[in-house]
Image 1 (cartoon, one colour):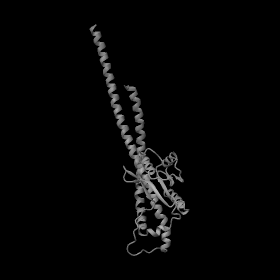
Image 2 (cartoon, one colour; image 1 turned 180 degrees about the vertical axis):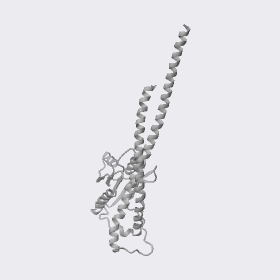
Image 3 (tube, one colour; image 1 turned 90 degrees about the vertical axis):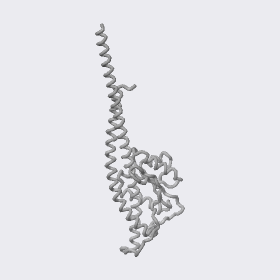
Image 4 (cartoon, rainbow, N blue to C red; image 1 turned 60 degrees about the vertical axis):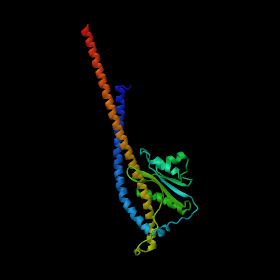
Length: 274
């Protein structure tokens, strides 16, 4: 049976854990809030580029044609750099293991690196993004992917990442880097400056990069949401356990006081009888 002293040591440990989880919850809240704002604003920007692509898909696709249709597919797996985010990474990597068939793999995130090393999966190249990824980091990834296509080492590119549904749910998905409807422009063609060909060529990279960066941001946002959810749960659990320990300690102390009173009363009673 636990003594008051042992319960006191447990309570000190739990209180330390409570302080730690509270600090991590606060940090996650700040990062999530900042990322949510960035993602919300960038989503509008990316969606406008997507609409432009849907108007002239064939023309934009022709800017970066596949040079070797017989080459393997390239999978870009985007995970988080850190743990403590529940099943966020494990679900993503488990999902990838179900579709992987020895294609080219580009790893993004330390957790993905660790998984591939453990499984003995050869990685073509690794990229690590900040907790709040920058556009330049996504551009570096895009340029490398483009080089694989240009050199004929890959025939297509698929991104495997946790699609952000809401703060509680992030769904692992595998999507072509550019999956847009083959719609046609309606109405009169707009005026292209300086000319149609130049406009298409200069805009194509921005369109494709905007799609990639949005997915990188989406992964970072999902990771922070999962971390925040996990830290909230850990903090609430620590508080609950701390309260239970305090209650148990108080009962133990009260029982001890009661026992001492009974013992003293018995001693006085025995002396009175004598």
